[in-house]
Amino acid sequence: MGLGSFAVSFPEPGSWAEVDAGLHDLLKWWGDRVPHLLLAENAMERVLLLACVARNQQSPDITDERIAKVISHITAHLDQELMIGDLARAAGLSVSRFSCLFKERTGVAPVKFLEKRRIEKARHLLLTTNLPVQQVGLQVGFSNAQHFSTRFRKITGQSPRGFRKAPSQRFGELEEAKT
Image (cartoon, rainbow, N blue to C red; front, side, top):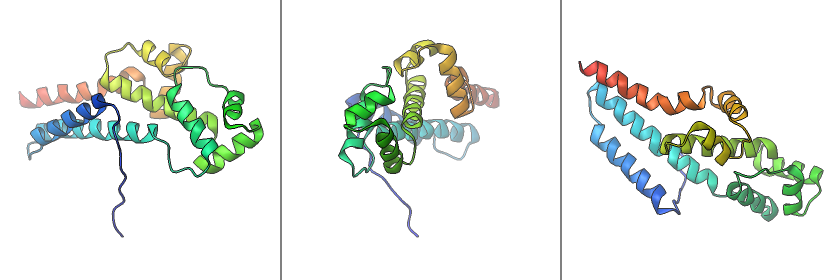
């Protein structure tokens, strides 16, 4: 059995620059010393997250054009309030038919899909910007910081601040290991 692969395109030049920088960091720190391996792990984690975000922002292999159109709409409007009725209208379907077809084609209910996309985008923003957590939540469509933090923790297992801090905590551990 062969290994699977997938293609990812980075339409925004800035995204590719971040991936390129992460790969350079990975190669720079790759070695047999534990502190360097941990830095290489951080760089690889960053590259894989950027690739996953980019891949997920592109429409998955969906044969139904209506559902693909809605997925594109969701991706482009994560910061807005997106109601099921509005998404169903965009697809030209009743709410019940839309919900059923969406789940059939994507494997997940529209509301769960939307929340997953919002959290993926939030993870990306937390790792690649210095925006306050509250601002990240607003940019991905959560109306308040408390709700954002609650949903983020439920899905990822850690708070947004903890998620952002994790790579720097590892770096701190590396500094302690050097002394």
